Image (cartoon, rainbow, N blue to C red; front, side, top):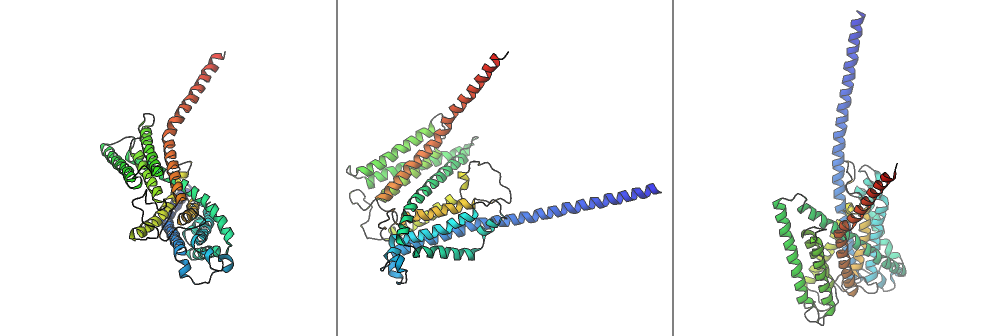
Length: 428
């Protein structure tokens, strides 16, 4: 009898323990589903937030343009005279652009300092990045207004620093673009190529090379119509040499990267050369398309607006591309990991604030560009030309780096193997 009672009690205990395990499993499954839903919602907020920051950056660009071109005629004399001067000249034109740029830089640099250590979606810093827009609006407003109370000497020092920051931004942008070109080439030309992917890659390569050659010919026609335009002839000819060098390296047997990536890079290099020549000051002898000074038509306005859009897009695309600057690119992302590096994103936007200032004042701290003009002058021309040469150099190095490093690795392995043979032969 006692044995049957013990058996019944054991079965009851077993059933209760099974029920508790089942309850725990159901509870864990329910919590996992809730967490997945929450993570999905947080990821959507994260992706939406970056567009809000892009809009903020666009508004600051338009504010800098308005302060430069129309600020002195539109705003009443309510400015701080100790910082802006009696006539207010130090708060408009070139120094006005630098003050707006400094305000934008302060805002995004503060965001960088408060988010650079963020790794998970549920961290407090992540919540700050994704929300609190009312508080951030106040922070942005204070950051934009404060520089207009600073002395002009300090703003001039910021302008010198902004030149360096803008150069760093250009370098980051180049690396991001080259990494994108490599990804595009890898996507359309995988190791195991199908006929369809090969055909698409070949057609795309032909299109880019035809566009590049057409760009070279057009630049010779419009910007080097006579031998006296020796500088333009040099720029265009050197660009053509870079195209041939990139194509030759890409097709070399030890590199063997195909024509797609070099074709895309060729088009980008031709674009940089064209943009550099377009930035030259008005010169009727060597520029058949340059309008007269002071003349503003609808093409100038459209080109100006497109340039502002390009600045914002370049900053945005570089900011979300933190993966190109990671040492470990095969790192696995968990559900609660952030989708992009918040700190890097804000750092790029802070450098982008310096970059747009240099474009609006044509890299010249003494005098800003004319109305509806952007990035015009010899300094702008040489910055873009150097940018072109650096871009081509980085791309060609990335092409030949694996071939250069491979013999060194093979030599090291061979020497290690030889040492092992020698040690085995000398051992008793």
